[in-house]
Length: 260
Ligand SMILES: NC(=O)c1ccc[n+]([C@@H]2O[C@H](COP(=O)([O-])OP(=O)(O)OC[C@H]3O[C@@H](n4cnc5c(N)ncnc54)[C@H](OP(=O)(O)O)[C@@H]3O)[C@@H](O)[C@H]2O)c1
Picture 1: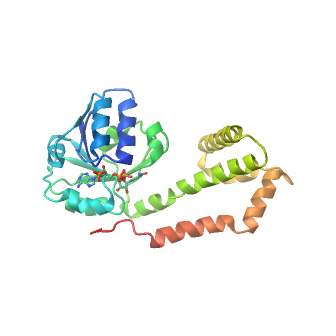
Picture 2: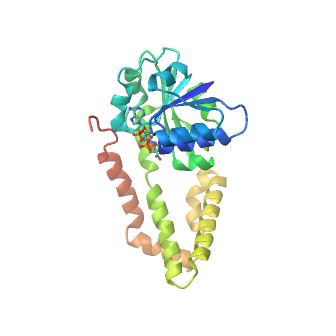
Picture 3: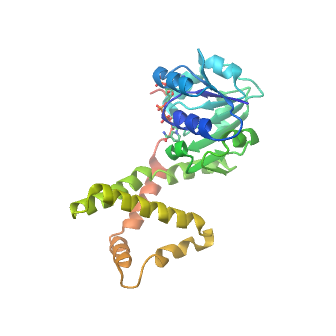
């Protein structure tokens, strides 16, 4: 199988590195020529990667075409490209659901939208595939946790739900900063907090879904430190603010702008 990437930017590079480092048979990865420095470097680093001369050459040679340009670059990138009926399209582009994308890549008609997150580079984190297409599932197998979902009207829910990444790191760093300000060497504070967060995520993942609601209470002692922090934040409306921020993003964020 050959997988062609139209757009070799941040997220494609992460996916290409992850695909190149997983075990099993290596697919041929075909790279479009833009982002010259990065696409040339990836082709030089991985023997099964080839940088081609044009977008059309990538489309002509690929069984699966990955669309990985920014939403506002999509129309220009697709202009004049000729796809094949038999081709499968895996789109990373936010804001254009598969049914709408199918009209832009006709006669290709098997289109999935994917949401890869940056942690894919270290083979972790979720990778949404909507709808499930067996060739796409096979092509992306082993890159974090593949989650298939068939209702494209809910893709926006997934996109908005994962939009807390920068908030998460801000929170992580604030706690490290707080420890450092209280006299703990920053390197030690970072190791301590990063290990704690990794442990919490591991416990969360190992807990059955129906028991997830118990975890907050299970991680605090009556009258203890955890209870105090959680109660203070609850009283300040911290958790409601988080839900409100997700609501606001879901209701108002524009994921696709044309003509910019
Ligand atoms: N970054 C993330 O965490 C993430 C996560 C999920 C989904 N996504 C989605 O993935 C897509 C790419 O995001 P990104 O962060 O990787 O963006 P990026 O780093 O800006 O990469 C965009 C790539 O598209 C190329 N490009 C632009 N116009 C093109 C054209 N006409 N033909 C071929 N290639 C073209 C750019 O080349 P030049 O550098 O030469 O302009 C660049 O290589 C976006 O739609 C985004 O919504 C990103």
